[in-house]
Amino acid sequence: MPRSPLSPLSRLLWRHQMALATGLTVVLAVAGFSLTHRLTERAGLERLTELGVERLELYAGSLEAEITRLAHVPALVALGDEVAAVLEGDAGAESRVQRRLAQINAQAGSLLIAVVDRAGKLRLFSASEAPSVLETARLESIAAALVDGQSGFFSSNETSTDYFHAAPVRRGDRVLGQVMVRINLAPLEATWVGLGQRSRGEKLLVVDRQDVVTLSSVPAWKYRRFVEGFNTQSWAEMPRHLSLHYPPQGRDALRWESRGEASAGSMLWQLQAPEGDRARDLPTRLLVQERPMMAWGLRLMTLSDPTEVWRDAGRAAWGGGALGALLGLLGIYYLFRRRAMIQLARARDALEREVEERTQALSQANAELTREIEQRLRAEDELVQAGKLAVLGQLSAGVAHEVNQPLTALRALSANSQRFLEAGKLEAVQRNLVNIEAAVERMARITSQLKSFSRRSGTRHERVNLAQAVANARVLLEHRLREAQVQVDEQVEVTLHVHCDGTRLEQVLVNLIGNAVDAMETAPARRLGLRAWTQGARIFVAVSDTGAGLSAEARARLFEPFFTTKPAGQGLGLGLVISAQIVREFGGMLVPWPGESGMEFRFDLPAAHDEGR
Image 1 (tube, rainbow, N blue to C red):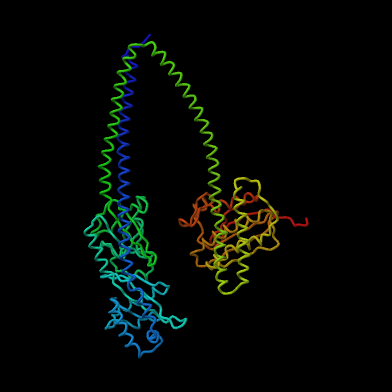
Image 2: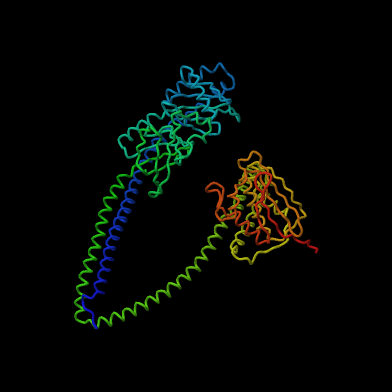
């Protein structure tokens, strides 16, 4: 029997449609609000970033011009023979040279020209009166900080920030002392402070090598340490002889934490000023842009207030939400109109509609069954593809880690060859070229073997001299061992032979020795132990160090992929995982072993029979 146009099923369907349309209207309003807010915010932050880049270049140009204006003066003064004569003990020339320094100082417009000897003692100065005891101590301290080859140095006191240019005074190959020229950056900083007062939404600061704010458009931030994290110490890691160059009021830090990337070239930071700071009332987030000035070890930074950008984005978002709601209301109107048309059609041909509904139900069931079959087929394909991608990801990470060791050796051998070539030591260069060729061949073998890492077939096992494998690994790490001043205690007899792949055995040794060198970086005594002994049909190999060791938690996670105790950027956490996998393929096991001090890793390999047997 045909149903009435106002049947209960029709009314229920109508209520469901209205609920769906209402929900869709809400979703459209929220989506319009969110999308408009995001796009407007992104555009505003990009405009703010472009403006910040232009201002950074302007500020950097003015700072660079001010610093380099007198950069040539120390070298010119150091060229004079009279300065060198005074430093060599000619006391009669001191007054004459000192008057000459005063003339140069007045002509150049610098604050002071001073000359110190090799012992760091002040010998000459351009001032008419001798500097005070405190000023003399400050100048000598700055000279001591410049002995590492720097040509410039920032030094701050309670009234100003000075920059010192320096140049060595030479007599032949001997360095007799150095000339320092002091310039005052207070006028430039005063200009920035004025700009900061007129533009309250932007703050400018310069951070030196010690992460100390040396120049700033906010006077209250000057001489404060710029520290990441709200719970870290501000001056604990700074060497004492460097911290003396900053006034005591800078001990409280400006702390910051990253809140994500705003756009290309800018970040969002949350900044926390010290207690009692007049600039403590800061926005929740600031747009931060940075321009390194590598020649002087400085970072020029602008901190812009994006509050206006977010306010504009909020206003635009309300418009987007209203547009989304309007689209939803149009959909509801369409439903009302469609319902009226359906009711008229039902009244005319109710029986035909009933047949049509059954046909539609069968079609929907058939379509649903087809969709389920297609979904299961796609799921199966995705599982297969996911497995392939997982293997490819592991192999690519392994290649990146394993190839890094021969590349490091190539870099070291190339640098040594250049020095030997300059020194005319052609035999040493020839030996290095032979080692480079061997490292390249070894790297080629590594990549070809790592391509089949996921497969257990294809690995070539042969009779390998264990002492030679250890020697090859030490050659690759010779530069690091020498640079870290590691004492190597090797107890591996040349008669020991194992049955394995020689190249992959060397990779295990390189990984373990490299980890041991890293673990002893801060150890007072650095001793690397390499031992091997026979036990039945097995040969055991041990690599030990005198580092700080590992905690119980770290030992429990040693062989987890991507777990590492090294600082960020210095390790992938795959070395031990790959080494353990290689040892397992050799039929052995890699295990950590408690040593007398530090850590020890042991693994066993099958002993190789004599060639005559």
